[in-house]
Length: 329
Image (cartoon, rainbow, N blue to C red; front, side, top):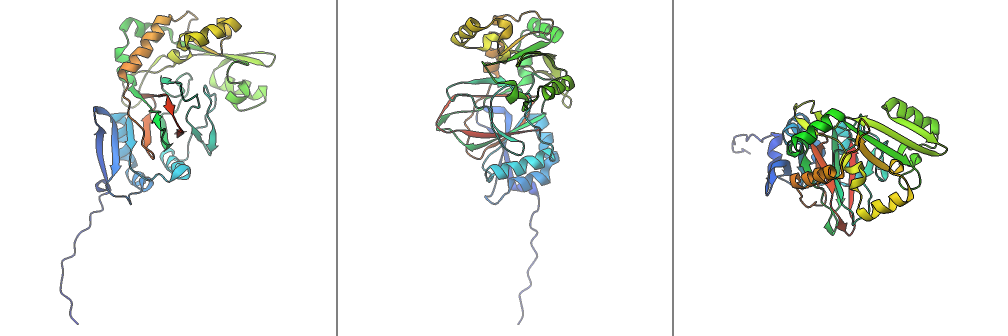
């Protein structure tokens, strides 16, 4: 039996032909959106083959949204995070907000009540060390709301009036925290019941502290602006607008100050020399973040990779069940 001779056809192995790059409608700058061109495209395998180019694109865009991939739940997300971080995920120690540990070094996003907005911020910019990357996985999308707004830290820096910016650059920011009965307890924040463990952590991290019986006060001075180590951009990088007493709703603020003096509030921020930051300055900074923000709805299985220095994030109020998992490195 004879067979007809046929030409061999070359099958493309160019991994880039498996995905499409684009932007969200109405947002030409960022995030970069990467979607699969076929249902069989496995995100972890694609990332393993394209890690270098992904990080080049992240340097440019600051945020990459992977949309339309089958993440395969919490285990799949944990596997992707292991790859992205080269098994160097960070533990969420010295926490400032409540969140649950779900396994490995994967956590839920901040667990504030659903009706509360979380202002935009760069993760752990209230410390002397912070993650360079943060990744969000939308496992369950809220029935309504629950978006994670983003703002470019370089744009925020440019929008803040020069005289305010220069004062923050010169004086820096002091973050004060009082661990008592009104907020997170030190046992939860430092994840230990031993005072000696807390003291050792603070000594290593350059955090000042004072014990009063079983109560603890900490304070630390950090830069308010920083230069990105790779792109050399000047970035607004602090959480004065979250820690400052003016960030509280007026009713909550009045209730707290009826119980304790301002220097015993669960958290507060002032300039690094101890001088007060005016309330109006905090209101202005929050307004600038809102003006600089982009807001888009989550889709189930979305995975959002952020350069934590270049891009701040927050959370909009929501209704229904919402579950977003987080990893940092």
